[in-house]
Image (cartoon, rainbow, N blue to C red; front, top):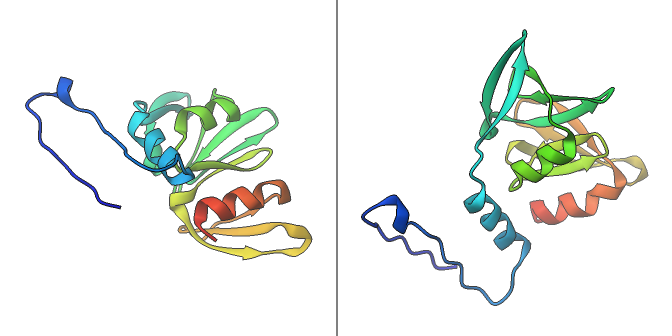
Length: 144
């Protein structure tokens, strides 16, 4: 695919144009990345509310109706529900179990496991399990 870049005078003139024969998953991902204005989510750590950039997120897990956001070496709580996070993060974030969202940019390797499930190794050497019902979509998004 050919890519062009053009400098404009001011921010009001900025825009992206994608010309393609069909709207593939890759193009949908690119559109989500370009349209996402929210690069941070609010998280809570030790009673303090912080803004966490989504590029730092490895995965998000729901435990006992609470959502936890995991980074390379930290864990935060968020008031947002998994479906809200899934919608707002978009792009490379994908549901891989009923209570789990993974950042595909943080995946180091994958492995087929018993029962049709898939194991995912993240770049921080943490392991996650992809439920059977999500394996096909994960494989498609990773190009497997």
